[in-house]
Image (cartoon, rainbow, N blue to C red; front, side, top):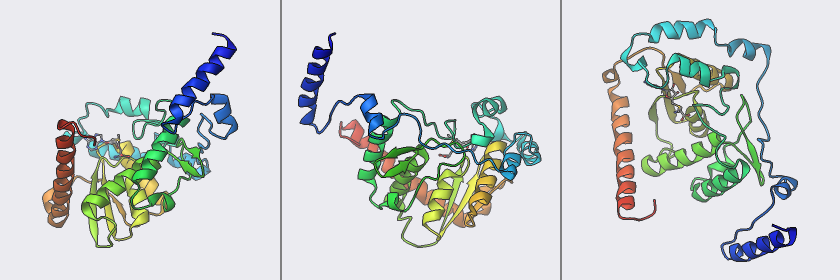
Length: 267
Ligand SMILES: C[S@@+](CC[C@H](N)C(=O)[O-])C[C@H]1O[C@@H](n2cnc3c(N)ncnc32)[C@H](O)[C@@H]1O
């Protein structure tokens, strides 16, 4: 195709797309405008202490491995020790991996659209209260005046969802039990917003518990408890009441979504 017809095609396409407030733009032009396809920041926190802490032969991980071994919850189909070994680089635990995958679709374009979507659903204006510091290998992108990551965007959506259904941010005391908390992404985001929330992180993968302990210490998350002992849930009757109400609300919300879907509505 000649250069002229390519330009014509672009003009024609843009004329049509203008009605939808969209435009076709060259990737090189996007880069000139500051929309880079590569993550803008991806910092590994490389102090001696951090390097020493984030090594896979750390004695605390060995201790957790021993503690979790043999428990039915730790009989993994996916999160096996070889999966964790191949998938999780401890030094860059917030990178693109099984905790939060980040190299989705078309890089910057995907992040720009996701940011626009999240901003338009951010009822609590969390984007003005949460930020991305780019630590531990997270992929972050500059979108307009915002620096975003999937960790940040997911957290904004999730907290808005939880607040909509549970009035999470209304100041009353609340205990949250997070099963499969990973490195503590939501725990850090949520307790940073609401000091009334006690957040208990649990996980059945030794490396995840270890990273969560590390994350809690690194950010000084006083309202976060990282549980590393097996405990019967019946010991926590108050906590169970809260958990049940969370499940009820979540299921009700999910059921509503499903109802809408089955009626062909948008969700
Ligand atoms: C996809 S990651 C999500 C982490 C975190 N919830 C988040 O959204 O950032 C799944 C998590 O489930 C944990 N996990 C895997 N098997 C588990 C099990 N049997 N019981 C509890 N947690 C488990 C993994 O260690 C990992 O932290």
